Length: 332
Image 1 (cartoon, rainbow, N blue to C red):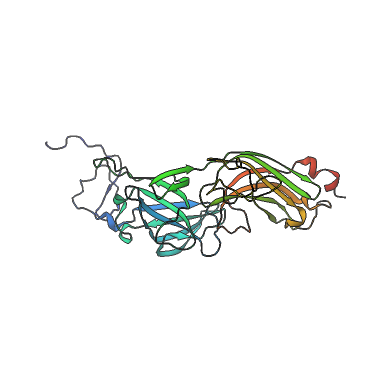
Image 2 (cartoon, rainbow, N blue to C red):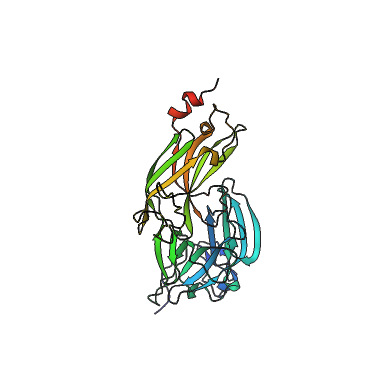
């Protein structure tokens, strides 16, 4: 070995306090910093359903070799308006958990390893789970996960950088990803007198802890949006058995054996009487269905606040003009 003859500087050096040293040819650093004094993880998450009661979305570090997990403590939790970019600190030195937010809200968790047992080198995944309250061990209702530390070869460095998380079920008991959820399926819907009927086909089976729910959406007489719940998808006539637990079991009482497959829901139904749907008073014509502009099927935690739709719309369809401009919806 000998003196370095050529040095190409790709970016600024860091001083011992981790501030950048902006010089084209900075001197070689001689002081050694202490990385544990600086935040080492930032997690930014949006589209978190608002959970009912004391429910929270909680962050964990997870080690797949022994299926161990520790809850993360956040040095700071910020709520950010994704439309304006404005943010506010909602918690400091607290468990990294939030109850969810509106569709235009994101949450930024700043994690310092000095506040957490072990460190990033001791774990290989970050998980987010749905909990009924702040927990000390994760539930099986994982919604987001990411792998960051390949420990198969001790010589490999830990690579930490920007990356996305996967939405789906992570097998906490066995330390391996399970079903990754993605959009799929098709459907038909119609109004028949005082009934709403929708039939879907080949939907992806919900990730654990989640279910599909139907909604009618539109605008009321004041111009404000409304969301009328149709409840969970069900099996077909004559039972209309709820498919709310299709995430966990294929044995749906009173439903045909082929309704829920290993990976999907072959057929799902929303069949509702007008008298059972909380629609606003009619203003476009004489029929309340004239106010409806779209039918949505959302994927939401079963512990979510189900008085409103969540941000994940799996299937949507618009009311056709053949209905809204028909005689039943005509206005004078």
